[in-house]
Length: 249
Image (cartoon, rainbow, N blue to C red; front, side, top):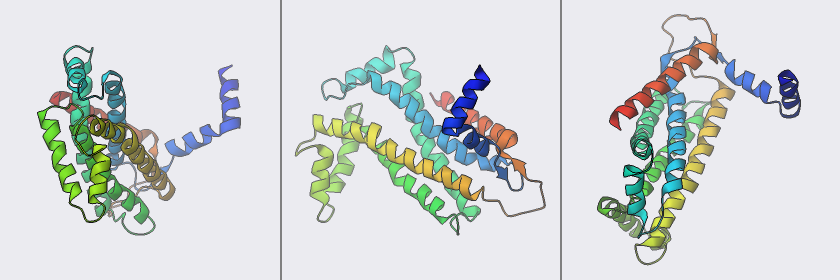
């Protein structure tokens, strides 16, 4: 029965072929721990998305209730303090592993043809990652978040020509208040993660299309398939990141 169901799904979707192509892609020179940085970038983003979703379910985006909802998450919600801690430190980890992944790409010469588009995509993730962090500052609506958000909005307003318009758009009007909070939430939990997820999807597609960029050779090693060797290295690296984040929480 299960084989028949899988055959039906494969015939109509072709997901099995895609899955096998992903798992058994050839890795020139064999698996390496340094190849795990890309998987860790994807994992930290996935962790942010999952923890952010559950935090969103208990968050109330209002100047009157935002701080109270954060207090509820931190003090009363079951596992809320773990979710909030993982989300907070995971955001910082995302930026750190993104920098390390970019350095790896520079060392391996990914900025050269035919992989230069992949390099540009990772470069484009940096302003988006910083923007996600900046829009998250305001959401607790405490003194730290309030004044930390006023600074970039104030800087935005002095930009030539479009500065005042962008400032008004970010604030949701002429005053800093409820609409500013809801605009920041829409960016933080909606538009920006969608953009990051799209770029990551394109990045991994191009990685699979062009193959893993090999390090400068210091000897010969036989090629390997992605599964199981590299898959296990990626899984261990992601687990270590999770353990480290739990230590900070």
